[in-house]
Image (cartoon, rainbow, N blue to C red; front, side, top):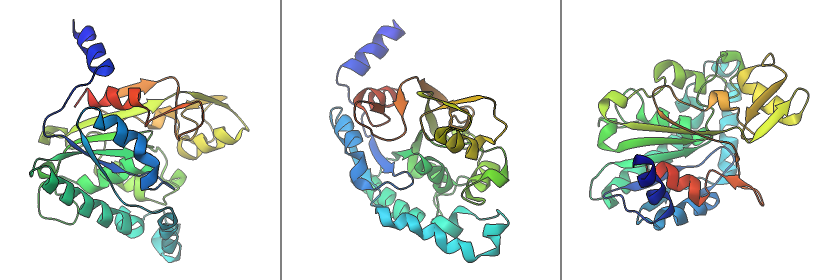
Length: 259
């Protein structure tokens, strides 16, 4: 019976009262890349706001190269991504107001997932004296490199490691925030391939002959401990012709049904 209900909710339209989504763009992406998610949510009368990141803004972390913490792999999200966090904070606060002061759901694609966790911090929402749950009741990550084992592999030079060390897994689950992580093993990569190199920047060079992931991020790094973990076999990291990605209607409908 539970399975039948799940199928009905995915196939047919359903509404989620008082739910509003804020999309946190992934690395190199901008607001225009997420219209698929907006359209899929609209079918269920769920409004979506997207943090207005421009593509060129992703060059800003380069300013950190002049800091000693960059070379010591000790950067924090505020060191390199303060511009992103500030924009996201403003968007979220405005979204809550539009939602009649009901808390909203964060949906972070790729790097947007761990940056969303940085916004939630230790339970006090970034840049405010408010509790995170006053603004956010759900954290959804789409193909996010949530876990990195070796700090020296951290391409953010410490930011991701900082998030994992200080706010690991579903850190605020006991405070009522629901965590949902999505991952995929659509792309098998063999050693010496370009995709393998992408995966190994997160998992390390000694990760076996083959690694599975979504074409950019390895599956083994995507899921958050104690989160609702949704794994797909045919979903790719970015939108591509004739291939599924995290913004496709079926994928969006699936995680919406868990809220």
